[in-house]
Image (tube, rainbow, N blue to C red; front, side):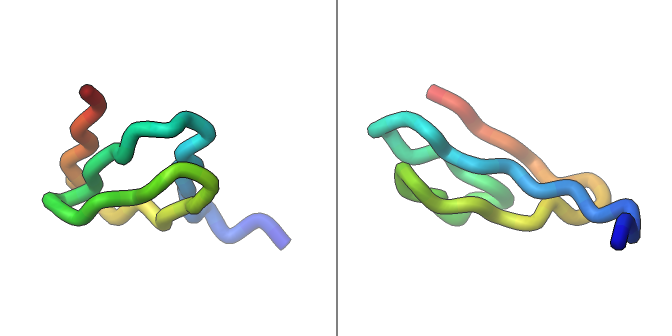
Length: 40
């Protein structure tokens, strides 16, 4: 069922940050409206 939600999956080793929260490798996170995504 497609409800329009967007998810981001971290396939790398280094964490990415969504709204200041780390998403570790192998995990996924739901993106909210105006979410800040930090990749470094």
